[in-house]
Length: 345
Image 1: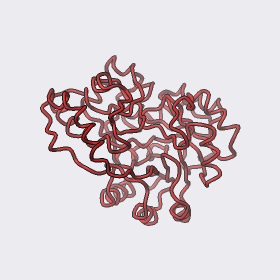
Image 2: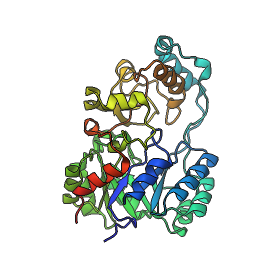
Image 3: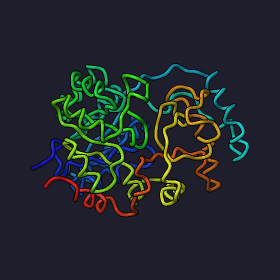
Image 4: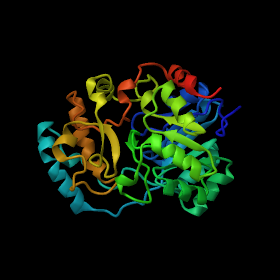
């Protein structure tokens, strides 16, 4: 029986900005899962190009993901303080502070993005940090897309259901990348996948997608035993050849360093899980100097580029979930079929 997403398998590839493009999404969709394209860091022109390539690559269902954060005000003083805090690392890697850009590097879902949804009509449109304004949401739904969004608490799941989500991603604390919380910044309110999924399942009537720490067929099976209707997996795809994961990121995933991940605001201004590196250790996982999301990422960019050019991952956002050490270097199709062994028959 097909999944509610229209796919053969109840398996969703998590959208992962910075480590993938349309190729990974297409490969997963072709293998029977739901491939997902991250759009949060793309301009309208880039998004149109990516959506066009994805639509040409597969006729099977696929999804696209957007952020719904509130765009921040300019904060030149805060960004200057953050650049100053990063100064010693800039000197270590001979990075140039003059290369630091200004303005937000990520933008929330807007009218331009909604127009592209009308043009390409994906099967699924997913959101992080809540849902877009009512008018934009109605525009998406009018295109026939299933709307899903991330919840890190039962309260967020209920809010999403009340405001029109067709399905809810129960994102456990183990998940790699950015936390999807939007009703409270209090991380103590957020639960692990094992605790969160059954509570969300009991609270809502729409389909529930388990996410966080799921990287093997056994993990997939466990998620369904908790009451999930589908699973979302991201980290397990990071070593696929179809992913654009940088060499230094791949090397860390294949080392003992993959065993230690932690939440940090250092790379973007919002909590996200990645492998612990020098920048996180020296400035702290939640540095007070970091400006609000996504402005913190501006000063990280040139520093990251310089460190990676020297072969170092010490200043990179090496996003990964708590199951990072279980990553396998296989094609996206092989990974998808392997994970599907844990899906209900």
